[in-house]
Image (cartoon, rainbow, N blue to C red):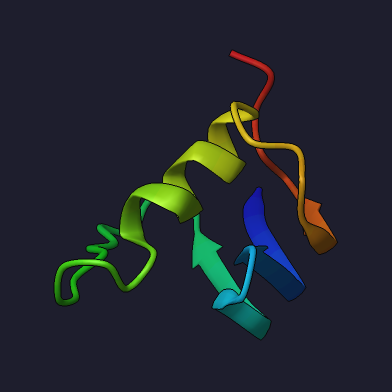
Length: 65
């Protein structure tokens, strides 16, 4: 199974964090999320974990557990 993110959009008031962001994460591969402070790393993880549901776009393949 693969995690697919397509057209992700997320903002906090006027700050746009993701604008039409897409990514495929292959099962069995090691994937690192890197970037400067404030670029959206934690926001992406919160969205994938289901802790943040206020976004646009489509996410498929995230396991229930």
